[in-house]
Amino acid sequence: MTITVQSFLVCDSATVHEGSRLTDLSQIFDSITASNFPMTRQEFIIYIRLLVFDETHVSIAVRLVSPTLEERRLLNPYSARPDPNGKVTIRCRVPGLTLPEPGIYTLQLRVNGRVCSEYHITAIKRRTPPAKSANQTLRPHDVDGSADAL
Image (cartoon, rainbow, N blue to C red; front, side, top):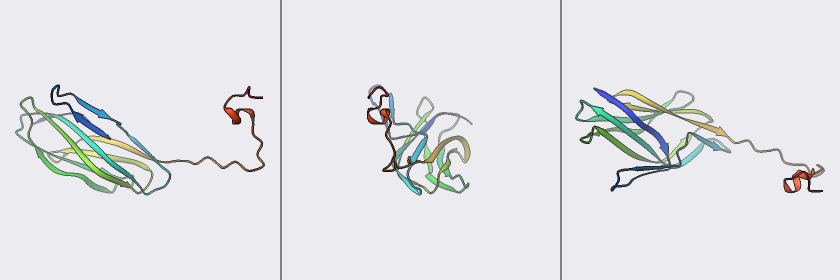
């Protein structure tokens, strides 16, 4: 069994154009910034493309591993058949994902029960700038962005 992972990523949109068979991937991301945790990332796509040799079908699953090493399924095992060229393409729509804390989350692509690839998403807590006090003096560049505004 020979399997090559050609693509394994997370994006907002994946469109295959039937005439040309080209795939448009839009808004690929590997970090999420939020003001507070837990936070929920709304709908997104997991895009997977494999090149498979010597197999009539493969079982594909995706698991999410949290920074505290807790695991959960994002894509239950799915059986797919390669096309005549040996390609397997999956676009899986995930309705939402709740991340309980900041840190690095790992998506594991498992093919026939074996981890073949990983994709990391970093969840970052957005820092809010300190509020300016009422008695703070404005500098010239605070007014319009240039130091020459006197």
